[in-house]
Image 1 (cartoon, rainbow, N blue to C red):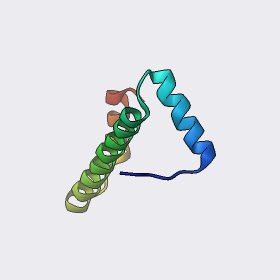
Image 2: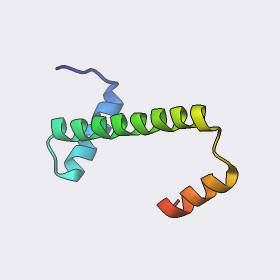
Image 3: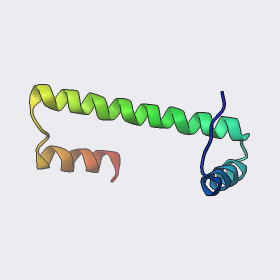
Length: 69
């Protein structure tokens, strides 16, 4: 697999991988996996709300408290 990115972004990614003590490919794979998990949660929540209605302000506040936001 080959990817291309803006040179400035490339340097930032390389620096982040170095700070994490990871090979570049491992750092990128971890970042992609995190994005896929995030997208899956977003899709699940959208589907849930489509079937059960939008979350209320109280439900959102409870969720924020429970996850420490």
